[in-house]
Image (cartoon, rainbow over all chains, first blue to last red):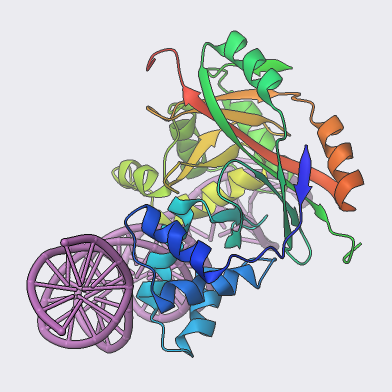
Length: 145
Length: 145
DNA sequence: CTGTTAACGAGAAATTATGTCAATAAAGAA
DNA sequence: TTCTTTATTGACATAATTTCTCGTTAACAG
């Protein structure tokens, strides 16, 4: 299992390529939305993101649409606060799990957590064809402890 | 690890005791809401539940309030569809995980999945004080496969 | 540079969730 | 059983959240 810490920014070119790969266009608005999440390891709600970005002339509609697109690209994952708040945090594309601080909501990504044994066991017992899982850990980050 | 299958209804008395234990009152409306979820292993959104229950004179407000109460009692857990739909499914109080069918949304509960090893590993690597986790499996149930 | 078309902003509209308050009824005591 | 207390209910208003429409703009391929 590996833990990846935040801070690995995508270059403008990488970001553009990421969008264009799936036929999406790379616009200043989309870059701004991504940069915002990239700069907030503790995530943002759409409302929070909109509040900040509207000051830069980016509309609420665009924030919603871009968050949706980034989710599809796998760059944004959402965690649900213990109280059901919808927060989105930047993340690397692909399968990974988030470790979220219940105090400051900072999220750290961890990958390669192997649950295949568990999945096989469940498949045997239930007859389900297990395809995947969603796993979130929560606790207190070092700064908040 | 144990898998529990649905179908174990709570008697009226058990249900009453469950509410009264925490100072809540046992009302016909609350029973109706619970019975509805109990009868739907694939869960319901609040909107769906309201649509059904309003025909029986139960208001939307009450549905929201009761779903909230049942959640606090641990009898109702919510799963987020791959598309972010808020579904609630009946469940036993206490820690457990849900196995959700991506086709029909039927949910089966499994308990005692031991992730303590993983949690310790993560704690070591990140410095987080891991307090718990939220785990959801998804796949195809035997009927849909 | 040009044409095609996805993406944009503004605002309406739909959906989802919470708050208010008078009337009602559950729970325990008498 | 009857009474008293007080949580719960329903109707409605309100707030919060998300999606849709449509005319305009600009990204990107050729």
